[in-house]
Length: 361
Length: 196
Image (tube, each protein chain N blue to C red):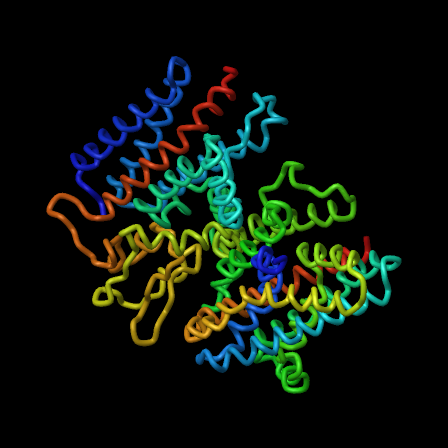
């Protein structure tokens, strides 16, 4: 639903102000970096303005999402080829999920030994909790840079060539995969997901020393990358890695419930056209005989169903209650929080890439 | 003491095989699940005693073969059993899977799962083997491993409460997929271990 220009500009100004403050604090004495962060804050805020003004969440969210993934790819995966300064990749949040037990164990050891670590449970864990409390499962469609790669591949074709249907049982495959990884990683004490299954593993870390095993690992990586990140998303326009493999997505589907925001379908307004089911990229809409269409716990709040619904039956709710205030709707608040978090997190690496592309070191 | 101190790890290794099985085949009542758990543990006990007796007879000369080659072999067997069970369970509508389930109902017996997973030595188990070699007499070795079994089995007691999870259909379905993944993974590990 479109918002009046005054309201849209209001959100734009507040968002830009907050992101600018963050840019100022994080840039420190580096004025060049500060201006680069300011430019990026402007981009994020402008896309937010478009969301509010034109009422299309998914289109502009998608642009931002794919841009972030693109810059992430440049910075942390292609730095060797593009002569960028060698940067240390961020702590991978996907690896966090299957190594949860090990991660907590090591951090408890670090804390009890007095050796505080920068990316310890108090910082990364706190950050993660904050994101869960605010936008919950929205992290998968607004923040995750890997998801942006998957989403970019869904845009390669205008119409799907194959129609993928997943039964309710097999939709739980990521959750079963997460449980399997938790147990195996805990037993072996090694990052099994990173060593065998991560399709974004374009570096040579975690590879086995034995040549035959190394070949098998690379074959697995390529298989997952080609099939689930490129081919299936391109052909079906579904985010198959995010919805069928990603263990972090499975973890978020459970933990994201602490966030009050949900995408809810109003049964009274719904005319059962099924468009939401068709466009949902993560198979998160279920059709029930008695209850009609419902969103499942795998919904990551991308906004596609909201934009496509002809009867405006779908909206963001608070604890499944569709409420609104006199001035704005709940989804306005959700979009604002999502853009703020996305802007802050992407602001930590995107401006640096822009500067490096422009020749600054 | 070895069993009590390392039981969590031991349970983790066995649990990978048994937990998914229990989630799918388990019953809603605690008493009915206890029977399956006892069958599984009896399989483990037989495996431990058999292993202790074999080590006692063979001695140190062929210990490496027993702990390396044989462990990978038993891992392959356990995972094949788990994989076959999981495939037939997940694709029950398929004619072949249905007939396989009916003909080989023995695969539903947790005893064999316990037997094969018990023959696969985990790290605490190998520590026990090292201790075994310092003991004189086969009987002492058997007593050691029975005590080790009892120590680790304490951690299996909470499994009886899985019956509360069995009531949720979704949990059973997830359990069957975990069984499939575990079976495939350990089959791969077992085969690569045998090849190396």
